[in-house]
Length: 357
Image 1 (cartoon, rainbow, N blue to C red):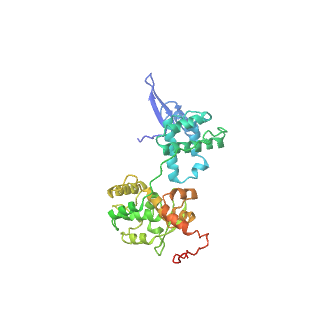
Image 2: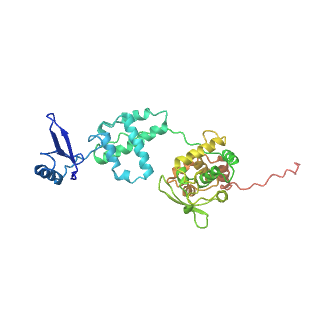
């Protein structure tokens, strides 16, 4: 005779040695079942428990109301956070969660966050200005969310200045030539380098470039920047076209690994770091400096800030100015002076051949 196994039934033996049964669905409430399995009372009680609506578990929230932990949870559910690009969301989550954890402020009340607290958090990172500034940025985002939600009315981050950060070194022409002399045309490293220096894009965008993004005539490429979502339609430089022509074409991605797969952003960054080191370049020569070098070249070619932004994708002219700060003063000075016309009337030279009588 076969046994019928009813779901959601468990049992235990009490201190008197009697086996007791109960019904429990998931993490719901335990419902005692009378008698033994198969009896009329047991089946009736089981069916009643099974048909009853399961008790709704209370909604769980991160942290208590009014705390920094709850504010973080609220921010992650906000329209502002949900509107961010997926990579930015991941970066923000990692940075915010790490900040809350390291500073041990998750249980603290949002209303108690003071200007002195913010400055102290920055002071702990004074030896790492970029980390201090990022902490300020994330706190400012959270506080503005808190104001929107009514947690508080004032902003303790207001008027707190960022620390002065060191900037990425802009590659010089000599450093560019040194890399190109070490890595020949046709190599993976030279191809990646050319895409970076001639398009002026970030590593994340170069890693994602595919042949499907190239126009039918092969002279243009469409780029949607991963960080900002900015859409660009770039004309490929003649030198870049020559280098791409010497690079074996893969089925999809323009750049690909030894196994034929597309590079990840981190993978391409590591590949370029190794290539830069192998070329004997100084530590200050990092991959992001090629984006700045591309902007410098455009500035030295007397492109306007708007023309440069149309290639680099910068959304503000202030950022363009920061990227082109290393443009050769001599080149720009000669151009500037050539645009100024003389304000003095030409004066005929004295007759040096005449003698005084």
